[in-house]
Image 1 (cartoon, rainbow, N blue to C red):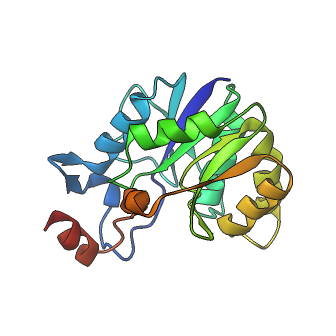
Image 2 (cartoon, rainbow, N blue to C red):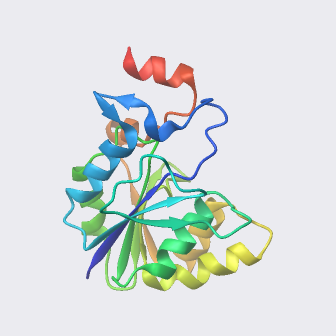
Length: 191
């Protein structure tokens, strides 16, 4: 199996009021921290998914722009799965600053040929820190052409088709999947 990675950085950041990717966390912008997490996994390729070209785009990373109309992370995952030449894609949201390469490596260990791994926090899937097989590209493309853009339902369909396996996350590791969505979240995380 071979792996590519995509940093999902295409959100509007409406609740935050500014680009979440540029928020400082532990002394560096979130985009830089999250790219380091992906790069520590030794991936063949790393992409950045966005709606528009970000001002902070590193020169050594390929940008994947959402096809309009953007459907948020669904569009980014669909584009990345259509682009990769590896067997699997590791997705990571830019606003999940507690996620670690060690946790993602555990997910890699759960992936098999033609089957990815999606963390489950109870009955809730966490599709923005997950692994998808290249075979899921058609499922994401079909979702984009429909009217239901819910990643939870796509995960359910992928699981039913044997393209992903759910990976239960221990309660102690649940904070790794927290997102920074508002200024209050940021204050709480930096407290």
